[in-house]
Length: 162
Image 1 (cartoon, rainbow, N blue to C red):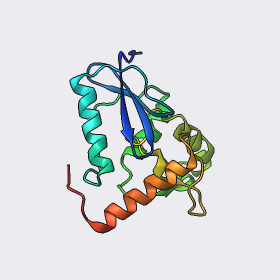
Image 2: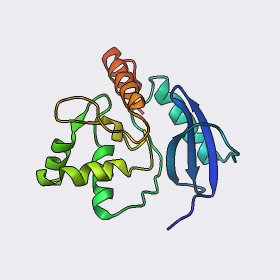
Image 3: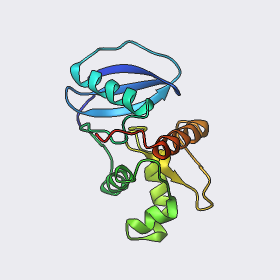
Image 4: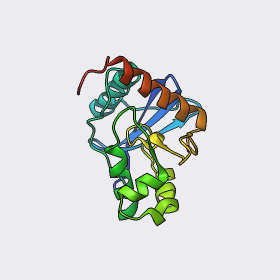
C-alpha cells in the first residue's frame, strides 16, 4: 500500500476539502471542519485547479491519477461511479444491476460509502430507488448541493469539455 505523503486543502463552496496524495497519485479527498498544515506540490496544485474548474461549472470530468485502495468489488463499484455521466444519477439497485447482480444492492451501497475520494469518484450521484438523495458520508446537504450544481450546469450547457 502506498502512503500519501502530501496534504493540501481546498476551500470549496461546501467547506474545506483535505487532499492527500503521493507525488503523482491522489489517495483521498474528504471534507473537514478546518484547514491544517499543508505542503504544496505541483500535483496537488493540479488537483486544486481541477476542483476550482468543477465548482466554477467548467469541468465535468477529472483527469487525475487515483490510488484506490479497496477490494476488487469495491474497485469495480468505484469504476462504475467514475463512468456515471455528469449531472445524472443512478439508484443503488440500478448500479448493482449494472454490475450484474441486483442482489448486491447492499454491497454496492457499502462500497459506495467506503469511497475515500469524494467528488472525484462521484458517489454523490447514487440515489435511492425512490429518486431521493440518501446516504452520504460527507453529510446529505452536500450531496443535495452537488447534485443541484451538476444539474444546473448541465442544463445551462456552459461546461467546457476537458
